[in-house]
Amino acid sequence: MRISELSRRSGVSVTTIKYYLREGLLPPGRQTAATQAEYDDQHLRRLRLVRALTGVRGLSVSTTREVLDALTEHTGDTHLVLGLALGAVRLSDETAAHPPETAEVDALVKELGWAVNEAAPARATLAETLASLRSLGVPVDAHTLLPYARLAERTAVLDLDQLTGLDDPLETAERALLLTVLLEPALMALRRMAQENESARRHTAE
Image (cartoon, rainbow, N blue to C red):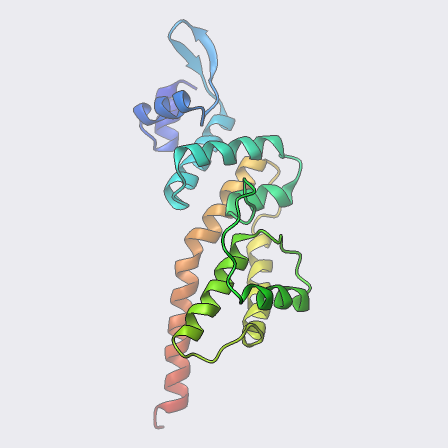
């Protein structure tokens, strides 16, 4: 397909596609003339993934390029592909400061029997959240989160079930990214509605 067709099918302007080509986010098409090139479905999938990484996850162009290069390098490792797409795997050895609650999170992960990378950003997020709650006087520890973690396990099964049957690594990464990031507000909305319903069940007079 010509670049105009790629633009029409992807919803991305020709100007933006050319920018992605210059920045190395999109591989060049097959040259058919001095100023013309042909593109295929792989370009379309990669273009959608670029938009998801920059628009949905909010990554910079340089970080998006790093993620895409890593995805290309590790296409045979589905677990790593998903980790890169979802931000569960760091692209560098850079580590953030660890609050004291990090040890509690590590113990919780061990108790759950989860296979979670020690450098996974979610570990730090959980530790920082525990620290913030305690600073506000909320008596919570990692063990309090155990039943929530079990619910998260069931959610993860539903998430990964929706990726069954996808063979293309870029399509898998794109679907995982969109389902996870875009579905999170819906899950939060469902939780809020469930809380309202439970409050009504407990506290509203019959």
